[in-house]
Length: 271
Length: 221
Image (spheres, rainbow over the protein chains, first blue to last red):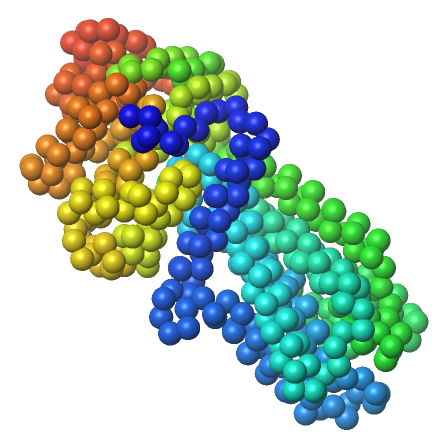
């Protein structure tokens, strides 16, 4: 009998046990998400990063074609890759978390699956997809010599991590708010369209007069993109960003997101 | 041991909150068989969700020192585009059970053959129910929650389920919600009648059903 009683799940768990449960629940949801979204057809889970890669490639190609619009010595491919990859990070995570709860309500019957786990698995998947896509594209262009390797890879990684954190915080907050009100989803999609051109993906802050710079730098994702580019090809331009400003935003979003998630966890009824 | 103390739960409606559980106290000891009866909408399923931990009470405490199952044969968490095998693996991973060790058992028990490797949306409702029951038996618990099921498949399969659940696991605690008089009589040693958000306990099945009938007729009048 003892050998089939392996799943003893008692109410008060130690921190180590909780961590083990957290890991296996997130992992199970992650695999389920991959299979559900990409299935086993054609290239399967490779779509995880092939899809964002195609997007980035397309946008980079268009920008390269309009290269003359940017009068500078900028590495236009590096500009395109960093710009669009950064958009993918903060845009896709919230997209995936808005309305993530309703289709997964039945899973809450498994006590260890919480609303936050559903968000986390989707956020991790998007973060992995965007990161792999960014890395593979960079290696590709560096490999064929169209792009110089990053000048300061740690600085680049810092900006990237900041953007992932920003996307995750925003995703949790919007996902939890969307569970309470349908309006969130309706407003988020037009907001993305408006934010995209302002997000720093398609411009350098330094190209603008000081007054406009100050306005642009109110948007946290602009700081992230500038930081990533500073690490990638910082010697080609003057970057404007503040990591402290981004940390403040990220902390705020994360706290609000977790609080809202906790609030809906009390009222969400599994079906 | 499972202990609920002063558990309250309200649900919002347009005309204000409706109290579904209004101070529920309940203790279930290891190996005990408790039947829960009550009219439609009395809150039996809400109570089951509180016990399982799927939902939290507004106030009061729920304490568990034994592992508690999800509602047996519950198929709601299944993903239609995934195969039977994928769904088994998912549940096993959540509960920290080695999926490969359980796949054989589930395949044998569910008797759905080659459909194990087909997406669930291609299953008949009977096949779905059989898979759901088989998965429920793949993870072991100290206490099983049974919310109106057991009408799974044909007579022979139903017998197999009863044997797997009530004979092989006769040492476990069970909390059974059912409208079937016979089922409750056959399997439960203690009955809790849920009415107006509160539980009344009976050691005698007939007495419990007399109280249930009184309560029903008083509402009709």
